[in-house]
Length: 333
Image (cartoon, rainbow, N blue to C red):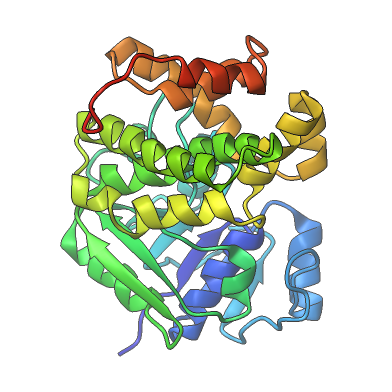
């Protein structure tokens, strides 16, 4: 059976990793990025110039410097910085007005509107277009190197879920389908905020007990917010919830965790960002989620303190004190 190619928008580490996943599953993949230098390097050397450069690209991947004359794909998978997703969608729509479906592997909330990815896609491309969110406990470099991994696919339509499972299921990669699109989106976005908190705690050398407490109570906050927005508890206990949260809070490959550690050590958001040297999606997510939680009266004390630290309203150590000073409550709240 011949399948239409998969189009991946964004040739950073994660975009290239997901392109590799689909190629290893037997699909032809078109990998596009506005960065002509990266695309030229991928085409010339068949290796990424910045990530896992010892790994040769699968022969099924074709780097694209332009979307002009791009064949119609089975779906487009967006792997771009979250705050430019809207403009990226407009570019894709201009080049491919008959696009069949969109998948998103970026995680966050639009800062200006508070929108999730499925809402941005509906706003730009219309509410009828099939949409899927891809999220799980994965570091891009390990995927590029072929380490075994799993992921959750939250799809608005079963046919798109089946298409994505088919496109991604390979010898070392196992996708799982759910129809809980909102739960998958929220778990992937909010774990970055909790990872900043965990990094702050480790930067302050507060110990393993504190990290474990933050992860557990952070999961409670993610589920509380997610259920209020229509997500399901079982999603938050799965790969795109607890799995991704544990990974991001405990391993130094996590940019959000490293950012939190640097923030605790330097006391400066700018210095922490410079030390990480890459996009930290949890920063804008924390700002967006704090405003939404206040507006919707959802109790999210960890996320709120992270947002206060990022805004310069409190210090990392004072934020920890504020969390510990809260009135006792039942664990189920």
